Image (cartoon, rainbow, N blue to C red; front, side, top):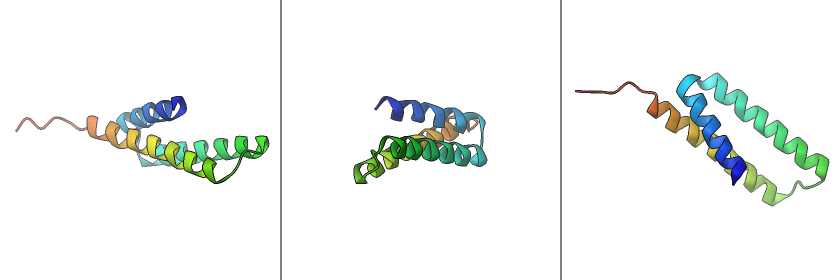
Length: 76
């Protein structure tokens, strides 16, 4: 849960400041890091794939929220 929260905040910061290339790079880095750690420790199984999906959802939802909050206000 802590890692998902950190990924959500990282995605929000990327959404506020970066763009699509930054979130694609962050997703690739997280995927490579998580899978390499799981392979080294021998913990890669089906449940790990669900955890990875949760990590990606946290990162991407933070990106969407950050992009929304970064929009200029429409004062009508």
